[in-house]
Amino acid sequence: MTLIQIIVLALLQGLTEFLPISSSAHLILTPKLNGWDDQGLAFDVAVHLGTLTAVVWYFRCEIITMTRDWIQSLAQRQKVGDSNLVWAVGFGTIPVGLAGLLFKDVIETSLRSPLVIAATTILFGLLLWWADAMGKRLRSEHSIGWKDIVVIGIAQAIALIPGTSRSGITMTAGLIMGLTRAGAARFSFLLSIPVIILAGGLKTLDLIQGEATVDWNALIIGSVVSAMSAYLCIHFFLKLLERMGMLPFVIYRMALGIFLLFIFL
Image (cartoon, rainbow, N blue to C red; front, side, top):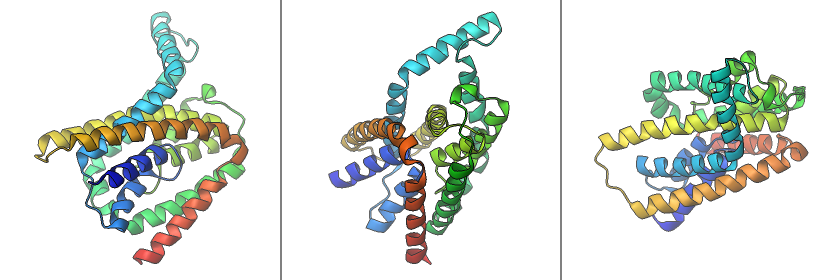
């Protein structure tokens, strides 16, 4: 990989992991459209590590508080502060974990088609627009209950289909369930932590079982660039979200989907 390829792919991972526009779609399509070789599992693991570092560092204070409250709630056998958010993140991860194990081969082969990505980009972009327009937006992530966890968890499992966007569909589900834009986004970002860990773990196992050579310079640069871009993305997205809404991302998804249909049909 050239330095330009490393930086472009790392930036794409960092920016699109948390925006509702699908990181997997961009990482699949960019090499195809530019005639680049596949970046390989090791690079995918490195840039995911970068985005994981960014989201954990950004929410470090919330994570410390949630963990402390959760430990106290176990000792007292009752809800303490934000302890419910730990349970929400944990149980909300179960559907995507099971779906990933059951459908891993199909997801990584048949569903990586540009036409599948085009269809899901458009379909779930329209659903995001509808949810943003029709959602009541009355509750924060701190009010999340079991019904919310089930709906958002199932939505996250659907996001294994390339082009859907994990952040996009979980925010869509949160908006449908009445969360504010910021509440839906913040819970989506917290929910990404175990998902990125699981995805990175599976890719690491595949990497260990393979015999591919590792370009450590590419991995280090990719990890740092993806971490920095992801952190800035989270910061500015949450700052601007209530003001701009989801429409700019819906328009982008429509344009990307139509472009892909034009190119690959």
